[in-house]
Every structure is written in structure tokens, then in C-alpha cells.
Length: 299
Length: 299
Picture 1 (cartoon, rainbow over the protein chains, first blue to last red):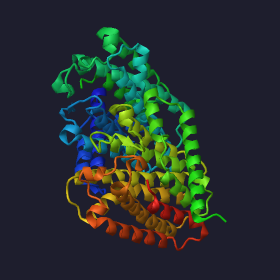
Picture 2: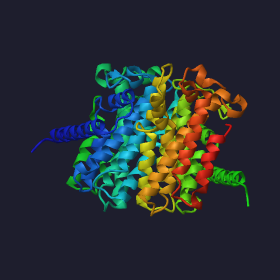
Picture 3: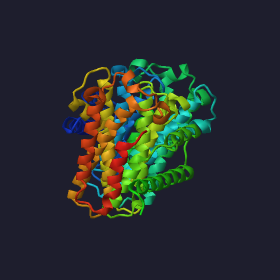
Picture 4: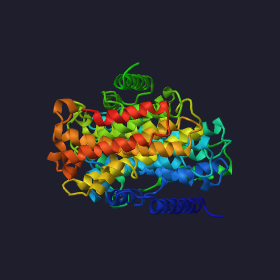
């Protein structure tokens, strides 16, 4: 019997390969538009990445008794939204980052105009793919589109980015910091799990509620760990300059709670994330493993 | 009996009022997200504009025998996409425009980061609204979402903007210029008409094909007239500096065909746009009037 760690590694590697293959296939066979734009889109989407959101989406499908492959296209759509948000966040007018996942950011590798357009087009593509997601009916496709729109727009991810920009150089309370992260990263992580669960035509409201609690708590844990990695990690491992939040006077969990306080909070979040899955049997194991992975990751 | 001109003016004014009221209502009652972001979104969407795409959408609904009000929400979604594209097109890294519709562009009135995010969030909102469009069934909502995704992404509007950026300072053939405009402005105009027609559950493939020809020809006519206005119009009327295409060495119809040649081409496009409506009776009159309006407009 594989250890928990091996089991998760196998699952993550399988998801990553399936997602990368599906993305590669779709980028190779579709009418591609102008070459440079297409190249920038490929660069941003196919340039690696841990595919955590797709894996959460597929693990959530498994948790509600569906074959995880049923969630591949929705999972790819979530990754497109994630990739678009990274391109735009990295722009000079935003976070002004030149390095991402150990490579030049899109506006550095191409140019700023192409980066803006590539992000725009990836967002559009995500909705187009959901509207044609195979193996689910029209009602489910629309429910997924609504989830994604709510989670990624002004009430979700983009709203969180706006709060983040306003908060640079200001002191935030822990509640304000939490609100920012719930929007900026939490909403899309929660949507990843909920979209995966929607692949089950008979998913119950109770299941969705439990999975929402799981994923919102997990999203916060993800951010706390991100903040800890920023002050403790190594540039070559985390793929961006270590200490970059600090240099920009961004409020973080360690800066508000101290390192030990942040670690303690992380452990609480993990506990509460796991207990929200109590109603799920063995089919929820991948989600449980993912929670452990998110807080233990080193990059 | 009203003259053709009065009839069209009444229709356009009605559409404009209905669209503005619907947009105002939706922006006032939804959970709004961060204040500054929300303000930038409102500024960009509610700051006037001729609402040509919404009017085309509503006129197309009428052309297939539907009450034009059935198309209000889809028409608003098209306007959100149009507004987002203007915000991003005006950015310093793109066209670097400071004036639009006689007002400061969004990144001037706010800041660049807020403008990028406002555009992003407006795109998301458009898909969210289509996914909940009232009075049409799930299948129609999805068909509309697919239309919009195809027309506004890398194979449509965003692709056209990428071609446009690549073509600044280069000499284009008339075919290349046409390809650029078919993507950049034509695709969304065609989608406006097709989305309006989709409000009829029984719309035929023949009707959609005729309307596509109508709207693609109209889209080109719109662009030829835009180019002519740029060299002949007045800054205070057209709301942007006159001659700005020329100053940027952008290829235009008048620069390739001469003013007289461009006017001649415009007349041909109008003719062919109108003949594509031959299969429609009186219910197609608003589309006919719109075609006349587009080529005669002075701003």
C-alpha cells in the first residue's frame, strides 16, 4: 500500500500530465490567431506551474464520486484564468515582476502590449472552453461559468488584486489582510473545488457547502504558506526573488503575526480544512492529501 | 408616418435609454467590490457612448420577430466587452490615448493598474451576465457565450488588436488591412447581431448566415467611415484628436485607397450589407436603418 505521500505524488503527477496534454492538444489544434499573441499565450500557460487548481478540481470530482477525467476541461479553464491573472499581476503597472516560476514574465519575454492581450484572450478562452465542456449537460456548464465569473471578477480575484494594490505601504489589520486574500487567491481556489464537484449531477447543497468551507480554509492556508516562503524560502526554489513582499512593504501574515504565529495559524487552518471533509469517505482522500501538501510545500 | 431618419433616431434613443437604465440598475444593485475599481468600471461603462452594438443586437432580435427587450441583457454584455476593449486599447502600452468620447481615458482618470483591472473585471462580468440572461433557455445562453468568446478572444477582437499593433508603421495591403478590421471591430459587431438573433428559439441557419453577411459588411463599413472621420472630422465632434491615426502611421482605408476611393468602397459595402437583408420583411427595417446610420455618422 503506498504511503500518503507517494499516493499524492502519483495523483499530482497524473493530473499535471493530463492537464498539460489537454492544454497542449487544445493549443495545437485550434485556430490560433496572430502568431506572436498565440506564442505569448502558450508561453504563459504551458510554461510549467504546479497545476494546483486543476488538481483540486479533479480531486473534488473524485470526492463526489465522479471519474476525475470528467473534470479535465473545466480544470484547464481554471488554469487559463490563473495564467491570465499572473500575466496581468506581473505587469509594470501592477506588481512589476520580471521573474515567475524561474522564467521571464510574459511582458519581459514578449512586450507589455502582447502580455495584456494574451491575458485578455486567455480569460475569454476559459469561458469558451467551459461553454463546451464535454461530458456534462448545459445546466452544469452554465453553473460552472457562473462560479468562474463570480470567483474571478470584481467580486473575487480581480477585486482582491485591487484591494492588494491599495494596501501596499499601508498597515492592515488581520481581518483586512484576510479579506484581501479571500478575494485575490481564495475565490479561485474555492471555485476550483466547487467546479470539480459540479461534475456530479446529483451533488448536494450540503456537499457543496462542506467543500466551500474546505477550499476557503485551504485558500487562506495556501496564502499563509506563501507569505512564510517569501521570508524563509530561497529564490532559486520559489522562482521569484526571496523577500520581494518585504521589499515592497506588502502586509503579510508573518509581518502581522510573527513567523511562529503564522505557523500556528497555518496549523489551525489545516485542521479546520480537514474537519470540513468529515462527511466524505475514502473518496475525499485526495482532497485531504492536497491540504497537507499545500501547507508543507517548499515552493 | 415618421421619416426613416426620425424612426431610427427614436429607436436608437429608446435602446440607449433602456441599455443605460439596465446598466445603471445592475451597477447599483450588485455587490460592488472595492470602491475604486467599481468606480473605474462605472466610469468606463456609463460614460456615454453611442451604444451601437446594443442597438444592433436589439434590432437583430426584432428582425427575427422577437420583442427587442428580450435582448437587453445580452446587449449590455456586448457593451461590457466593448468597454473593456476600449480601456485596454487606450493603455500606454497599447494605443496610449488620453482622450475618449471627449473625456479622459480610464487610466488617465484613475491609474493604469486600476484601468487594467477594470477591463479584466468587465470582461468577466459580460460572461456572468450572459450565463444568467433572462427570458432565454440554457441552450441559448450557452450559444451566446460561445459567440461572444469566439468574437472577442484571440480569434476575434483581441487577435485583431494584436494584428493592429504589429502593423503600426508597416505598409499593409488592402487584404491585410481588411483582415485586421474583420477581427478587431468586425467580429464583435457580427456577434452583436448574431447574439440578438439567437433570442429567437427558432432562428434558422439561413437567417443567421444572412445576418452574418449583413453584420460583417457593416463592420467593415463602420471602419472605413471611422478612418474617413479620422482624417476629415473635428476633434471636438469625434472626441479624440483628429488625425491621430495619421500621426501614428497607422494604415487606413483612405491612405490605401484615397479619400474618394474609400468613399466609393463605403457605398459598395452599404449596398451589399442591405442586399443581404433581402430575405427579411419589414421586421428587418431597423437593421437597414442602422446600416445607413453607420455610414452617415459624423462621430
